Image (cartoon, rainbow, N blue to C red):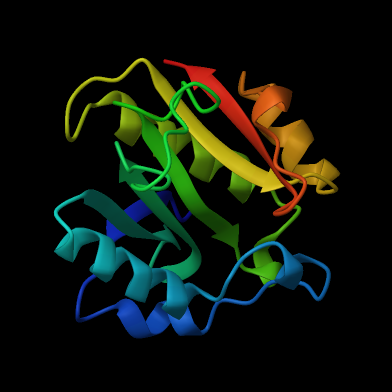
Length: 169
């Protein structure tokens, strides 16, 4: 049986990210993966830590994840009080499983691998991991809650419709 694992996105495998697709409903939840890779490059160029991985089932890439460490939300605005969980923490910035591989348990298995990576402290150990999801995305809400992520309603921004959730590591 093929094992699920993470592989760093490199020059040799970045094209596989292009082939990953979401359902029609989910397309409103995430930007496309190539845009995410471009953003990761810009953020790295600015001196911040960003990790991009393909989620693989054996040799087949079935998903994508982008993780940031200690990324400022807005360098021109002091959001530290509202977003107390963002400093010295890991941000699961993008996470998706291709629509052909959804509802098979791969999302949960992949999230376990992602959290193992985060807990290994690739930049340094942190108190928190956090993420955001569309407020109406009940599937994401339930899955993240199963892993212990707790919503931070006071940091919810109606303008972007994203609900932050935090996991104490």
